[in-house]
Image (cartoon, rainbow, N blue to C red; front, side):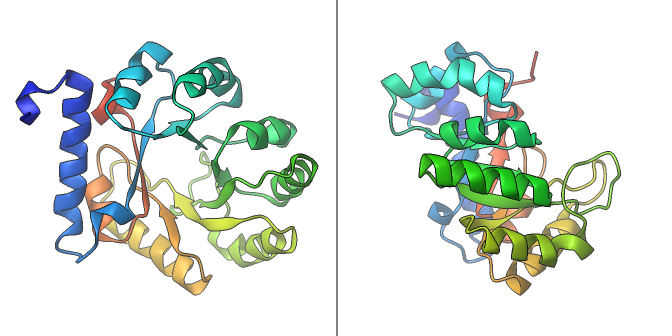
Length: 225
């Protein structure tokens, strides 16, 4: 079946995967090493189901409460779906986040490290952890400041969090490549392989610079309500 003959959700998914493959080629990367996270925040289960039916398995949610409302029922039908929490996380939601998520992309402070460690020990469940870096030093954004990163990573390792990599949101309206390259250097220097970076507007640049996880919302779902 050609892409033009696919259902709309499957066609959008195929197009994004093709763009990831094209971006990976000049970097001599295997596109299979890039995890596509479909950012389903604010979208109802009815919008998520067509992507699940088309084979997409990794999804991103911002808020624990919203994810709790949608994902138990979706996972009953698609038990191999994987949920990534990508929004800022309150420490008092750590236990719920650990119970729900396969990966948490927004670890940014010692108090959250401690809360997640307690929750993981209590539940004997260890979702993959990404430390969010405030890569553009923007006061309105979450994320660990770059100078504080070594200490936060040391705390996370001491707490036995399963560190998968680093995550960032580059400043809006500015060429993202230098910020993605900086995150990749910070990850290398820290001995981490995972790079959660790149969204609908810039994921191809992120893939060329080493992204292992790209977070795509509007290009798959359309504009949020």
